[in-house]
Amino acid sequence: MRRSFIGENPSVLWFLLALSLFTLGVTVLSEVTGVALISTSFVKTLGKTLCLCLIAVAMDVVWGYCGILSLGHFAFFGLGGYAIGMWLMYARTEAIVLESLAGQPLPPTPQEVSDAIGNQIFGVVGSSEFPLIWAFADNLYLQLLMVVLIPGLLALVFGWLAFRSRVTGVYLSILTQAMTLALSLYLFQNDSGLRGNNGLSGLQNIPGYEDTSQAVISIVFFWASAFALGAGYLFFAWVVSGKMGSVIKGIRDNEARVRFLGYHVESYKLFVFTITAVVSAIAGALYYPQAGIINPGEIAPIASIYLAVWVAIGGRGRLYGAVIGAAFVSLLSSWFTGGGAPPLNLGFYTIQWTDWWLVLLGLSFVAVTLFFPKGIGGLFDYLVRKPE
Amino acid sequence: MSTLLEVSGVSVSFDGFRAINNLSIQFAEAELRAIIGPNGAGKTTFMDIVTGKTKPDEGRVTWGERNVSLLGMSESQIANEGIGRKFQKPTVFEDQTVRQNLAMALKNPRGPFAVLTHKKTKRNAERIEATADQIGLLDSLMRVAGNLSHGQKQWLEIGMLLAQEPRLLLVDEPAAGMTSEEREKTTDILREAAQTRAVVVVEHDMEFVRRLDCKVTVLHEGSVLAEGSLDHVTANQRVIDVYLGRGHA
Ligand SMILES: Nc1ncnc2c1ncn2[C@@H]1O[C@H](COP(=O)(O)OP(=O)(O)OP(=O)(O)O)[C@@H](O)[C@H]1O
Ligand SMILES: [Mg+2]
Image 1 (tube, rainbow over the protein chains, first blue to last red):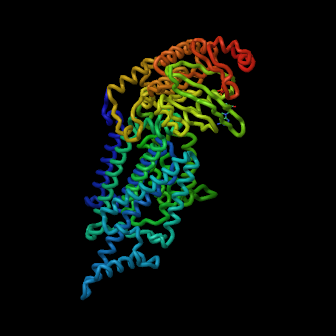
Image 2: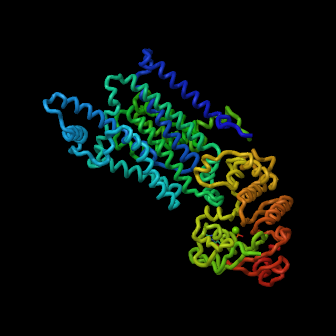
């Protein structure tokens, strides 16, 4: 009667297998092996895509399984990126400053070093003081803790306030949009302590590995992203299977009924909202070192809306659907907006995809919602017969 | 017999309309009770108040031998006190199997971490199967609830109530939309459930109420109009005027 978790969820095994093969394949074809069929910059694009797949899985759990249409999960992604970015920028600037001060006859005092680093980092916003929020930036381990702690706490407090007052549906979505908008506007300010609209940059340079080529670094991050996606997928597949899955799907379908069964619905929503926020933050912390730069624009409300579009197109309520949606749409999007798609000549008008891609995406979203509510992932139902 | 639930002097208004008007009603341990009354009499609203969905404007609702007040409690706390509820419209989780529906209802720790680390045990499986047997769905455990017939869904919902092991079951119109055969079976399930706990059934169908063979309370305009055996209340002139006269009998 008792079957193993994998036995009951064969798609998990298939997914992990596909992910491993993909990771190996990309590695073999990358510049590190000398085959160089895949450029370093494309390895980075693929690594970033894996991070987007991870946040899409989190989004699918919170929306597709628990029914909370959060339009703010990219705020947590961005915060994770900022948190790791602070250490990257600090440690690298410190190394540069120490090197430049090394030639002086008198060894620099710690205060001088700190001032010089502050000057380097905050000069662009006319300051040299370290804001309080940089207190742990000199310590990788503490800052890694911040990657999960800060977005986690924000999600906990926000979720507690929202769920406790029983805000649901559209109102909750609007509230999450307001949260991400407020955060991004705050970060745009020069005195936010995070360099205003300049954001944090140079994140592709990993302190201590100055002599390692970007080809190697890109593969390491690619592997780390693949591992995070695999682990996150496994974790969420476990969460949504079994009784927890029953309860959160129950909350999605009929919240009141779950309450009258004696479950404290608010705690469950808070739990799901917070763990998905933390996983989003981890995805962000892996994404931005590959992107090289993070600025407040990344947290703009529209980013979180795209996330919902990916999950809808991929098929919500199934984790591999979210992965497919995020990978497919984000790669297609960079192909179209990067000028990869040839212009379409209609005779009377030439469609430039850089301008028209968003329209196409919007139309696809509407079409999927109306005609294929199960999304791309729904195609798998034709391959595998479900009981009844 | 000792009082299990006591509602006294409860009133509630919606936009100035008094749906429940100084209602007082009591239920004893392990009693079977039918509540009847015309549409809009406040039967469902009464259940909403007891289960914490609606807060009354005034009055008291006390529970158990220690007479704790239910009014400050949330829906889930009240459910955990031992009050189960079946809705007027059958509400089961249509996406999930009969087994999953029952497993969710089964009396077990309700916190997120207990649920996350929940392991399927033989004992739980036996409890689920015993309940499924009681409601005649033992052969349908692996079926998706959305594919059940209307009557089976109603039974599944009653089964979910039983699995919660409540001390009081509030059942809103369980026989609505059922064939007469299904109704008969529903009566049996409810009568059996009432052997060990209090069961309160709201129903319009007089045949059904007669078969329950229990004390009847007639609600009208938010308060009790008459109470007693079915024959006693149906002989009451006011009951005939406001309820039976409208063609319900
Ligand atoms: N949330 C609400 N807001 C406004 N009015 C309500 C609300 N709930 C109930 N009412 C009104 O209160 C009155 C009692 O409703 P209730 O549903 O309790 O009746 P009922 O006895 O269950 O009727 P029925 O036999 O039709 O199920 C009705 O007039 C109804 O319109
Ligand atoms: Mg009613």
